[in-house]
Amino acid sequence: MRRKITAAAWGVALLVLASAPLAAQQTPRPLSITPSARPSAARPAVSPPTPGGTADAATTGAPTIDQVNAYLNSLTQLTGSFTQIGPDGTRNDGKLYMRRPGKLRFDYNPPSPLEIVADGRSVILRDRRLATQDLYPLGQTPLKFLLADHIDLRRDVALKSAKLEGDSYVVVIEDRSTFGGTSRVALYFDPKVTSLRRWVVTDPQGYDTTVMLSNLDTSRRPDDKEFVIDYQRVL
Image: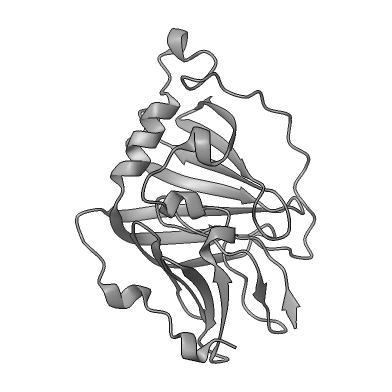
């Protein structure tokens, strides 16, 4: 049985999943789910940013979208850790590996049996316990643009807002080309846009999943073997 989910995952620009099967009482789904928990409260409408970044960037000294694009484009490789918090409060940890363009891996720590792998063409959801894996097009994942060879948030997605919020610079984007409908992603950077701290994915049903990043290493080049998909095993 297949149940649609929207998800996101990519370690510093990460990827997510778009649709996947789920075994009964399986551990939490990757990076954005449609659980039985109540959806988040409705969010206030946001104003679109001005072309240079935020509406008041000139007077507040806030970063610009050009700075965000430059930072994301500088992330050509990385390894690190992630902590995922689902809409129902469920917490999962794991390791991530990324190499642009197109390659990403999320290894969930036990007891979760899940792995997510993108090889530049496809994304696979692998269940180590059930020995199953299911394949999806990379181009239909909410954060596929962050694995692109070149990133331009003005061109590649609908840019909803970009502004300083407390000690973070928050960029909110929408992608209407994912399975199941429009997904919204909020990217949280430090105030000077020198690191991506976390992101929040809101799926088409209104559920939020938060992914926090830590121990990021951009000097280590992940090995090719981290991004291998065995197409012969795809169900």
